[in-house]
Amino acid sequence: MFSLIFFNHGKIYQPYRQTSLFTLVLRITVSWFQVLTALLLVGFATKVTATFSRLDFGSWALLVWLILITMHVGSRLVLRFHRRNGGNTKTVLFWGSSESALAFYQELNDLPQLGLRLVAWFRPPNGALPPLPPGMKPPIGGGLRELREWLDANAVDLIFFSHVNTQDVSMKALIHFFGDTCKPVFYVPPWGLPSMRFHVEQIGSRFCIGLWGNKDSLIDTQIKRLFDLLLAGAAIIFLAPLFLLIGALVACTSPGPILFRQARYGLNGRRFKICKFRTMTVTENGDQPGLRQASRDDLRITPIGRFLRRWSLDELPQLFNVLTGSMSLVGPRPHAVEHNELYRKLIPGYMQRHQFKPGITGLAQVEGWRGETAELIAMESRIDADLRYQREWSFGLDLEILIKTILHLRSTNAY
Image 1 (cartoon, rainbow, N blue to C red):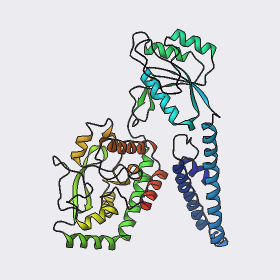
Image 2: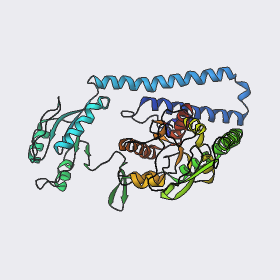
Image 3: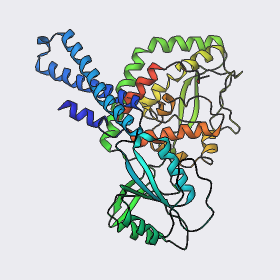
Image 4: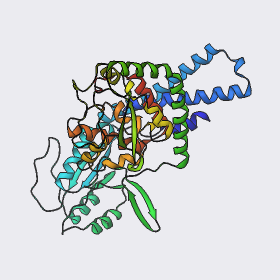
């Protein structure tokens, strides 16, 4: 029963066609740890733990963990290998502009483990045909009459279409046409962004597509908050001597305050003051015009500050931000106000990251997107990870991120 509950909540049984199998290993580990914890709690409550050998229990737990990883990861590896070699595939028909068809074909080509094969595509009868990549067949036609004739004569498993602004074919005509087929149909919006989640809601008889936003329940939010309070409180008590030592080193090695406080955007875009150990010779406000990010070999960083930043020890005072409720242990990292105002103009959906409380660590950081974002693509990758965290959030994902953070405290991207 515990395995069913925790494994289902940990997303072990969901498709992993586009997800790293290392993520699956971590989720299995976290879910199995939760099962073991529940079993031990029940054992203590019923006073039957004394009848079991610790060595036997530990050996059994390790053996089952290895079996679970072998079964889940091994079966998916075999299936991916089978699909890469042409097995277990589904045929796909695509209708849309040349640009959207080319992008769609490239995605399928880059992800052979999906087992989807484009067998035909149609485009509206307008515009020149761009050069096609190797292996991609030219379009068969573009009119709905030609498309109907092809579907009557050929079998296909899935249909994908993208709307094109043309007078020849309206969206209403496309919906009517594809609704008259007996195949699964998927709409590929040309305006879609990777940061969107496309969650369908219904208001009366009207269907609405949620593009951004937080869909977590109140119970999930309360569980996350309780976990933050317990772990942050325990960490502050356990690390109290380290706090005193770092504070003394900062005070003795450079003039200025021990703690550095700066304005950041938090939940729902509300400002708060983030706390860190001071690592620089300057203490700039978060909304100061022209605010510079810390860079490699930055002369503003003190010698002890460089060590603290390299091992992420300067972030420890944010545990008090967690206790006061302005931050969480895990969530999108908060940026300085000035940087927020810059990047919100450059990256669509940027401010949606503030639907969650900012965190001491986050998915972007454990995926390597920490430190300076000298190029726009680096910040875009960080925001993509932040919004993906919101879409996929679970208690198990928070544990997974915390474990990865502890295992990689020292980072070459932290300076």
